[in-house]
Amino acid sequence: MSKAADLREIPELPAEIIQAGLNGELVLFVGAGVSMLLELPSWSDLAWKALHALREKGLLNFSELEQLKNLEPKKQLSIAKLIAEENEHDLDLTGYFKEKVEGNSIYKSINDIGCACVTTNYDELLAPRFQEAKDDLVKSMSIKPKKVIRISDKSEFFARHLDEPGTVVHLHGAISRPETMVVTTKEYLEHYDHENVRHFLRELFAKKIVLFVGYGLEETEILEHILRNGAVESTRDRRRFALQGYFRSHESLYDNLHQYYEKYFGVHLIGFIRDHKDYAQQEAIIRDWVPQIQVKKPTLDADIARMNEVLGRD
Image (cartoon, rainbow, N blue to C red; front, top):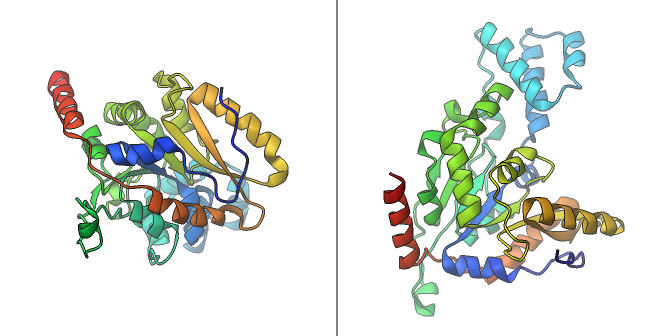
């Protein structure tokens, strides 16, 4: 196993990620830790807001609210949805994710990278600006970015979308299509058991270089999928990376977790120091990394290999 790099405020960008951009193999996996930097609700915040909305409508009282307070968020949302359905009330979860703009936030930096993104977030602030330039002269000119391709229905989860820079795959659905939003425990179980979802994630982790940003590795759905499908290759084959923050005084914890995630999941931690800006430090890190990442489409050989694979699978 490799030794963890020293914790820094701006960690060094791994060479594998730089090369993956040039090869058309880079995918960013964006979690709630990014949307929370714009004060969008976390999973627990969303559940609590939904329950409070039911109380305000008179569908829950304060005693019932208190009893539900300590349940885990999936259970809270499942119960909230049941109560809403029984009373023909629209929870309107999408309303909690609107009225936010990219501005100069971390979303701007992520979108400037331009590669395909996979996200567990419902919001639609991810909109990668892929600009294919053939030389420095063209790069300096004003080029209209390619239109964002947004995938949120599991019936459309195909690995080929990952070959298109500028694509966003909403793994848990998106607010523009509320019917695709995975909310309850039952929906989660059915979602991750669906063949399209399983195949998509299998292809993602086998064929692409993945960088997790704003994704807590204690959230188990994705890591369990990696382990369940035997997708952990040799630790020398660095294909999965996760940007993770730690206080400087917790460096020994960082070292131990670096070994743990590398050995059991093939995920290589890129540690940063939280002491001064907490998780907002990620904004400066991604902004620093943007100029180092040049995203290109997959090579012709990769396209042919993908076509042959699809034909063989069919």
